[in-house]
Image (tube, rainbow, N blue to C red; front, side, top):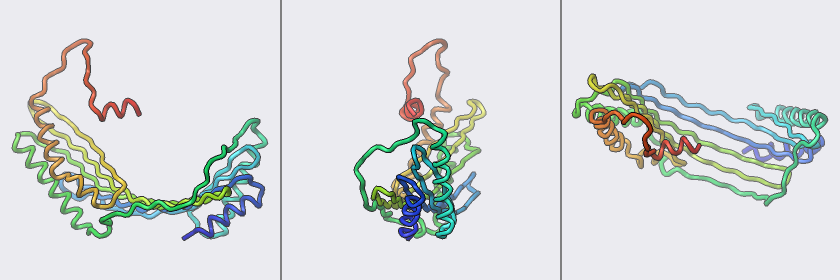
Length: 253
C-alpha cells in the first residue's frame, strides 16, 4: 500500500548523502477484552501505523519516525535522520559499519483460519463468562473460594514492510492471539494461592478454540485447590529443589 513511499524515502536519503538507508512501514491492529470476576471490565480496540527510517552517514546511524504518512512528513524524518547521523559521525572515532549478507525479497503471511472480526464481541464475552462460571463451580465443589478472577483475550495483527538501499524488500503479515488469566484462591484455614498464566500463538481465533480454556482452567483450579488444601510446609535448612518448566524459563531468560 505504501511501497512507493518507502522507496522514495530510501532514494531521498541516498540523495542527501547516506551510504545506506532503510524504510519500514508498520501497522498494528489490536483488540482486548477483559473479564473480572465474571463481569466485562474492558473491551478496547486500536489501530496504529507509521513509517520509520534508518540511515548510515559516515560511520554513524540516524533514526526517525512518524505517524504522518504524507510524502512531506516522510521526507522531513529522512532529513532529520541524515542530519542526526552526520552530526554524530563527527563526534565518534570508530562508529558503525554494516556487514555483508544475502539480500532477500518476498512476502511472509500467516492466514488465520478464523478471523477475530468473524466472532462477535457478544460471543467472545459469553465464552469468557462460561469459563468463569465453570471455574467458580469447580472450586466450590472442593470447598475453596476464588474471590479474584481475571481473564483476558487479546489479538494483535501486525503488518510490516521493510525496504532498503541494498535491494531488500520484505513484507510480512502476522496475526497474533493471546490469552491470560490470574486466579486467586482462598481458604480460611489454609490462606491464599495465586496462579498467573499467559498463552499466545501466531493464529486467529482458532487459537482460543484450540486451547480449550474451559477444560484447562477447570483442571488447573482443581489441582490448585488440592495444593492449597493438602500441601505441607517445606523442611528447614538447605534442601534440593525440583524446578518446574516455567520457573526454568524465567531463570534462563
